[in-house]
Length: 421
Image 1 (spheres, rainbow, N blue to C red):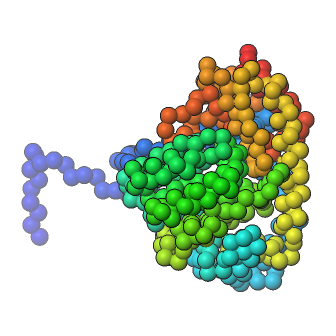
Image 2 (image 1 turned 180 degrees about the vertical axis):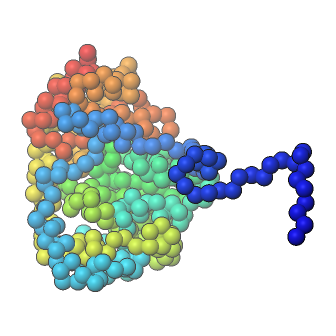
Image 3 (image 1 turned 180 degrees about the horizontal axis):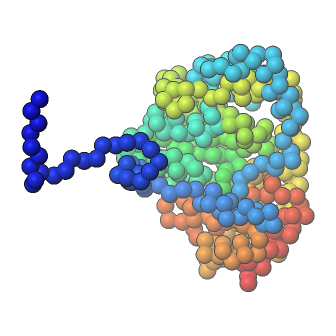
């Protein structure tokens, strides 16, 4: 065999890659691929950022939207999981259909029907928390540049979902009772939105509830202009005062164009990550396809345990017990606000839910004030991140359900020192 002589001027061949722990060309870290534009343009959740900073046990945290853990029905939930694993282990630990376990969908349909909206199991898609339901709808409905109408202020994670979808987000003007139906009608004509997203009952972050007459007016706007509505209802069962207001989805004008979202997170436990959406067939099928691409299906064992809980335990009685405690905590916060907030501040009295919204005098910027307040070992969420448009920087959100009345009283005293010091 003849071997060609190597030219002195020829470059040396690149060293071969040899796996191993030693240094060498193969150990140079790879640069991160360029991130997608939709990720680069959307920040993280300010609420999550605040929770990371205020995780110290001495901090009284009014910032989170967390249910009170001592009120979880731990025995009932544990028994439901034991039943699923002992009585149907092969099913509980196996793959399931994307739509969700039939027994759970049947239980959810019965609860929805009992609350005034006739529903069958086939109307529902079980999701991994209602947050996933919102993401699936964005995937199924929104192209980059589509317009979405939201409340002002709006649930923060919804703004993230719509932002990641590349949507153009437009806030509907409103007042202390919620969005203005006349302003909504004007925006629908002018902006031609793909959908309206709303949390009409005990809204996050304001705690306000859209009155029945406005719900009827919103439904009429939807019917007149072909508007789709996404009605999110994670807090509706946590009512402390007054009478239940029917869903927008139950209004005859809106039934064929409203997607209703629900969740067990606030009434059972957020850790089981169970939500659902009720939607017309064609849109529901599109969401099923989107869910198949996202996670195939929601964990089977969680679904079977929840279905068992609905049949073996009284969820309504559990919610009533939780609501009684939360009512006391809401009242404790309302009683102490006047002494904690600066003169000229205003706030509403929510009839339910988990949040209280306050507006300080215009000279106060709650984002700038937060470090000073956290130094007093108490925390809130500034209002600015909840706005799709120009924010009201004097606003803040307080969660009242996680602390006892005594802790709330002490937290408000600390808040007062931080705001005025």
